[in-house]
Amino acid sequence: MRIVQLLPELNEGGVERGVCDLNREFIKRGIDNIVISNGGVLVDQITKDGGKHVQFDVCSKNLLTVPVRIFRLRKILAELKPDILHVRSRIPAWLVYFANRVLKIKVVSTVHGYNSINFYSKIMTKADEIICGSSFMIEHIIKHYNAPKDKINLIPRGIDLNDFSNENLDQEFIGNLVSKYDLQDKLILTQVARITQWKDQKTTINAFAEFKKEHSSAVLLLVGGYREDKEGYFSKLKSLVRELGVEKDVIFLGHTSKIKEIFFLTKLNISSSYKPETFGRANVEGMFLGVPLIGTNIGATSDYIHEGKTGYFFNPQNAEELKDIILKALETKFDKAFISQFAKENFSLDNMVVKNIGVYEKIVKSRY
Image (tube, rainbow, N blue to C red; front, top):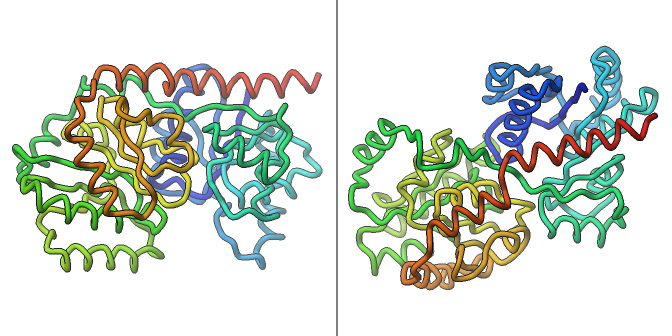
């Protein structure tokens, strides 16, 4: 079986890391996997794991270049001769929709984003089979796009059990991080999310500044990079940190692959998104190491936050409530082993791979 996955770029993010995970696992199982994207830092990982990457602009929203890109993409797909096209974003989905009219290759879509409800977004429901990472997203596409229930598959994002455990930690990285930022004996709170407005690091910083007044040893790690068009937001966050007088306690770590090591040091994981998460990979990754999650009460978080057991909810953009919930979480005796086992049973990579392959096989068999 030959699969072509299409996404805008291969930079950081849960979608991108999920594509890399599937690429590696498909190759292990003898499935030919090809990724088409506009490039990025994770391209080398695709090829290192045995997959193939084709660099092509399935990212730009420039309408003037659409006709020529459709023509070129049709040519690429005709040469690759895949059994399945797996689209993971709206622009690639639209390009495939037109490029595939003659080729008629079967299409799978994964609805990753809670996007504006309009005709442009509806393209993600026009595939032969649809994958959603959460119950929330299934309800969303049925309600707003009348997506056919018999084509929808619930497949939560999967985490590699071998990667996300307390085994094989990079102790050198941990030691250097602790030394560089003086983290020894500190109460570490973490938010893993790319720097962008809807991930709402602003609310987390405001809540932390108030929390810090009661816990002098607290430190906030903000893990995630930013694109050039988000540089203004990043600058505002840096200014906010200075204004609140917590510049020594809020640490911007940027992009790093050492997420497991950071969660090993973390007491509480925070997700303050004010737009519903369609899954929230980093939220679940922390749980694999037994770290409780404080998250906004919208979107996919209802699939994995069970209050008092795996974490707590708070209302979006409510810094005062977030501060209070952090205090409440610190007083709760969470069972780390329970949190870890819950994550392993419900969000393993193996489950995700098997279910994805099941969707592909279903489509392939339907052709005969």
